Figure 1: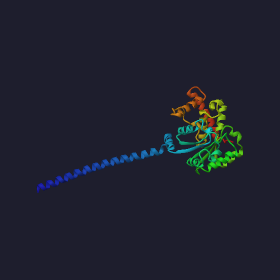
Figure 2: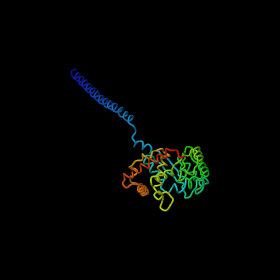
Figure 3: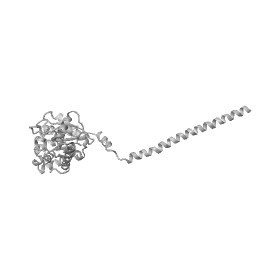
Figure 4: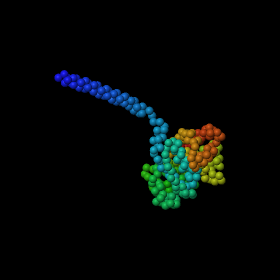
Length: 293
C-alpha cells in the first residue's frame, strides 16, 4: 500500500513538472509572436509613410519598354540621334528601343508607296511601335508630306503617338493651315530646326553643328535634336538631365559620339561646359513648352 502511494506521488510530481515546462514553452512562443506583431505594424507604417525614392521610380519606369520608330532619311539618322535618344532616355530612367526607316534621300511619300522594302515590311515595322517620328526629305513638302503621314499613320497601332520632326527652315515654310491640319491629325511637332536656330543665337556656327564639308548633322547637332525630341514626346525637362550621366563613361561607339558632343559644347573646363549645357537646356525647355507656330 505504501509503495503504491509512493508511485502515485511520483506520478503527480512528474505531471506538475511537465505542466510547468509546457507553460514555459507556451509563454516563450507567446513572447515571440508579440515581438513579431509589435514589429510588423511599424515596418508597414514606415513603408507606406515614406515616399518612393527616385531610384524606385526609375526602376519602375525601366520596366516599361517604349518602342519608337524614326521614319525619314539621313537627316534624322546622321548625328547618332537614335542611339543618343536611347541613352538620353536612360538618364531619366526610361527604357526605349528605336527602329529606323531612314534610307538616304527618302521621302515620306516613298515609304507610303512601299519604297525600299515594300509595304508589307513597312507595315510590319510600324504596327509594333508605340511612337513614330516622321521627317521628310528637305523638310516640309506641303500636302505631299501631310498626305504621306496620314497614309503611314493608318498602318500603325490605334493607340500609337505621332510626331513630325521639323527640320531647319520648316517654321518658315509651314503655314498656319499646315499646323492646323497636323493638329487635327493628332501629330505633335518636334522643334528641331528651332533648336538649331537657338544654338546659332548662342554663337554656335554652321561648321560646329554639321559634318565636315557636309550638310548632314554631326553628333553635337544630333544630341541637341534629342533634347527637344525627348522633351516633346515624354514631357521631361531637359534642365533635369543628370550631370553625372552627361559626363559619365560611355561604351562602344557612343564613347566617340559623346566625346564629340562634349568637345563641341562651348567652355574649357567640365564646369564651364556644364554651365553652358544648362543654358542650352533652358532654351530647349522653352521651345518644348512654347507653341511652335
